[in-house]
Length: 139
Image 1 (cartoon, rainbow, N blue to C red):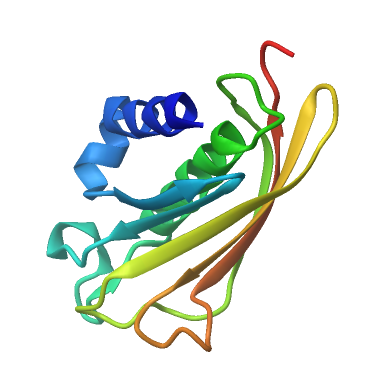
Image 2: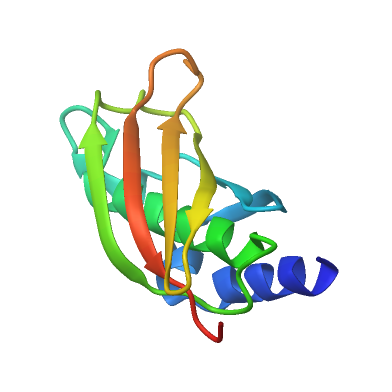
């Protein structure tokens, strides 16, 4: 498992957009991952509201889902997104860190299925949710 954690951390650190967004892997293991993205005025979609752009949230959800797949005990290696549905529930509160938690809940020979939730400080009201399918490479 240590190798998978190391691989997932390297995966996230190697993605240019993850670095630009300030994504930080805060937890990983056994098909679960958590990533945080601190508030950054450069990522605001509408200067009048100060709300982080949905594209930044989307990239964060996708990256977290990929990390969850890579850490799953039945996944031997890398992954790529096949399909990702994102439902935006509300705007993230300006000034707050957004945290995404993803769980890889099922793996077949070729496909991993993942769910994720993005929240700000109000963890009872999601900012967005995601459900996706990812490749399972090297199996």
